[in-house]
Image (cartoon, rainbow, N blue to C red; front, side, top):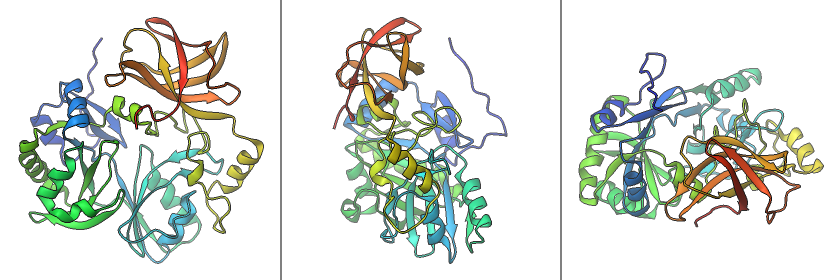
Length: 372
């Protein structure tokens, strides 16, 4: 069964949208109210290049929320469950953001551009509205807005050499999650060593939407020597690497979960002096004991279709968890998934199952990541 996604004015296009269409994009999803490419006609080929070569992704839907002003640092700390007081200019930090009940509502990367200017590079939820409302309610002197910034990702083991060819050898000295404000042939950028894969890579934060096509063409031309191809964030690789996907593995409206359940407990600073949204709730949750844990699953049988999402994990006739996403891993030659399981269930149980369209499947629990 096939479906189409209408291209309407209510959903925004990234600065690279026309370039992806010209290069043969075959599907889109909607992320942060924007079109996000799904694949370019050869998902397996795009996966192979991500693992062995280099790919370029339009991730303009990974929007930025800028916090700027005298109270920007104060607002950042109040929004984030992680202590970010030691963040240096030019450094990024992965930060959980929770609501007042302690449930995760986004897991952005925080980028500190100056003492009073920060970006939250967000997952799929309306954090600009949340941050602006919190700032106004607390009477903080800070401007909260979406800047003209659109990331283009270059990912894969050959991404480092391609990026050095584009910008210079200094890029090899960037630590993971660190960044530098720079330019490429006059195009203003922030270059960060980051990306939603574990294969290595960089994100080019374009700061002028009018030059999206130009940037795409420059990267594509330089990448030709490395057999670059366009692609999209890859579900199979993210499962193999154990990467959390807010919106898939947890979403406030469909599967609320707290950072402890999602493996982010080490990023929650309950002992520090700073208050933050959700801190009292998270203290209670930790004291009462964590009820679920994020884990991997191995699903027996024939390759699972990529359309299988969020299915209940059963022990006999009792629901004990859920798998949020699954895929057939080429490297592991098995079906894998990620999801939540009750802490009453041991890792070595052998009577778990899921019901798919193709029938009942036995499953086993696995640690994360599947591949280091």
